[in-house]
Length: 453
Image (cartoon, rainbow, N blue to C red; front, side, top):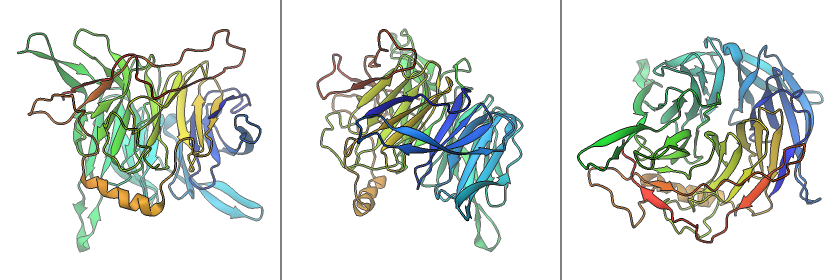
């Protein structure tokens, strides 16, 4: 793994608020507080044994305020961008005599305040957005109109996610709740069904026993509005088996101080977290799965996951990056000391070769992974065969765990803080500390714990 903070003028030294890779070409799009969207070509540094670099391609200038979020459609033919003041645009790729260019295709108008996050449906026909106006909106992209308004949150909606299997959408708010909506279609005339999402779960607190066995206390699972970030970007795994949720705040015991975490929800039970990841020193603000599905390495000692393949994902705190896979609870790499200000977004390239981070300090970090460094991608035929796991529970209890028979299979993994320290004597420009995690036993054993609703 090579890379670090790239010292170029990304957005006129203004904060970079969002990043996303084109799903086909691998072009990197960035959005910033300079009201602009910029497109970049990523250049490999592997031959020179250096980190990757970025070459400016062109700008998409139309927004009249800071661009908070942008995401390419699954086909790569469209780009959605959300900004302050409720601005939400759909850009479309058009062929030209010299190549291709992006032009504004639709303006989606209904949000009254800043749009903070958005996500496409798997078929690219719909879009969900979250806003400071406390609502999430599902849009019909082709019609350019509102399909459904989800307005149950009582504070900013800072993260939204669309299930790749099209059954669920999820939203995360600074009101300390994560809401899971399930599609219960309305039957229209001529037997047609109209998509309709209904709130199925509101995840907000965990019940924990006290020294008095007859009593218990409930603690919030998420940070409140004092979290110093406008973003709580959650994500579904590419196979739809897991929902990864940031901004977690978990108490090991009623008397202990809360630790920062990200929660993993199993598709088989979205009413409560299945796992919580090791605590970090700063709150988790964004998560993102690598789009590539990898073969197993046979190193799953914990056996928390029952998957016939490996998924890799990035967990971003305000100041650090953790990279995990589903064969281990321990992160496979940690990067710290990358930026002087809060990290805002994270994205993987379509081939899993690059990872990009954006920050409010006006810079982006680019990482490049060597051939097979993350593992071997599985073939299309292997992937189809492996997908039969959908009918099985993807999370397994640890062998030494005891759960009350009236509770569902919920576990949490608690480890000591493993965040890498920033380099001593830091230079003028931000630098990175890359800490690979070995297979040696941790100094403190991972202790599974029950999480109650």
